[in-house]
Image (cartoon, rainbow, N blue to C red; front, side, top):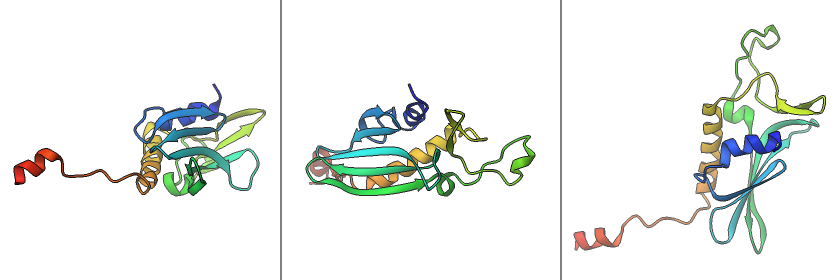
Length: 145
């Protein structure tokens, strides 16, 4: 299992954001409806081997990409403190990077709360495209009658 896959599993391997998660390289695919699929992948923002964002795309099975959002870790998570390191007095923006052939988080390892925050932002984005759930059930209709 690659580092990309391990990190994506922390975000999406629990079927709360979307179902049928499949992990391929630095990408995760899933389903939000019969026709809509989601693709989430770590992306660079201009620097090779420095993954600073998560790109989330919605794909219609018949028509292709419907919409996408770029979730920059700096915007979602902000700057994070790096304990006992004088090089990062003001903290650091979390990002994955490749150093000596190994992919890892640079200077700051996101916490479970960081992953939850990122997952919540993805879920909020996808909520715009989900089918509305009918709020009133048949039993409520009968009670009101």
